[in-house]
Image (cartoon, rainbow, N blue to C red):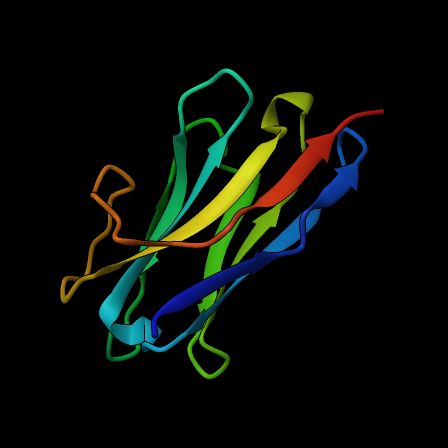
Length: 127
């Protein structure tokens, strides 16, 4: 059974950092695009970053709102995708989800219709 489990959320002060993890089971990351999404109360879900690739080659992209602050990466051996979030702002407060989509390509888009979703982890940026 394909499963995604997020962890690493919490309360952090503005300017601080958090690293989110998305542990995958039941499938191999090498054949899937993984996206990070977030949803704040009263707002639509937003695509944050995605990563894909196979054979040792990796492709990733991030939304303009997080470029230069967030970094997505993956550890194939651990079957886990990470979202390193630096210089956090109050507007980054949201529930963060990871999602997976079978993809043989070397690109990814957060606009794709991701098929498998985790349960989410809360990130709160506040002083």
